[in-house]
Length: 293
Image 1 (spheres, helix red, strand yellow):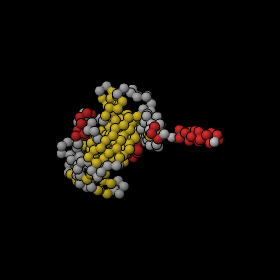
Image 2 (cartoon, rainbow, N blue to C red):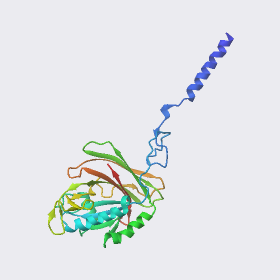
Image 3 (cartoon, rainbow, N blue to C red):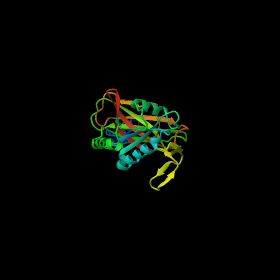
Image 4 (cartoon, rainbow, N blue to C red):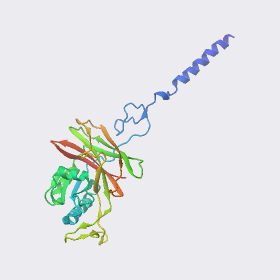
């Protein structure tokens, strides 16, 4: 009888010890626990393997072409400049074509805002980041582009698409400070289309649907317009303010969106993410990246 009284408390003690040392699932908060990631979750105490890290951490630059289907020089000068920049700089350049004028079916409200913001009167016109080119784009723009690429990037960029529908696009764009940032930083997500076939006025004054010259096959094909600026996902020219007063290294910000596709857009779409800095009343491109959809 004495041995049974001793054994019972020992069994209960052992059971209590095993139960109290097991994981308490009620206290687990799942999420990314890496402060250096884009989606760090401060309150998480259990890493669930969902950490996201930036794709683009080197400087890339914007080559913007202000163009129009009714302008005879856009097909020759504008098209030639785009080919030269892509051939020379490859993935380090992101091209945007902003169509102008109500008679151009690829013009858009965001394109009109962009044109007015840059005071682009002549067609075609060109910019590299926030620098307006007044001379031959490659001659004047080459040194500007080389200087941008040589600099260390201030921010890294990333994009995660979400499952949408046949008529919508959805996702989240991220910006992360690489170095100490000072000032106001914005994050914008632009919809860009490729492959719209539409006549383009040629240098001889006539409009030819097959005016586009394919340099690979040395034949004329239907004129396909690419890199067309369609919209910004939040209908804001320079996106949303993410860092109001700078940011320390590794601090991240994001912009989530869901936007309905428009009938005037191309079927082949990309996203262009731009980090802007507002400085002296103007907006400066900090970094830019293109992401496939």
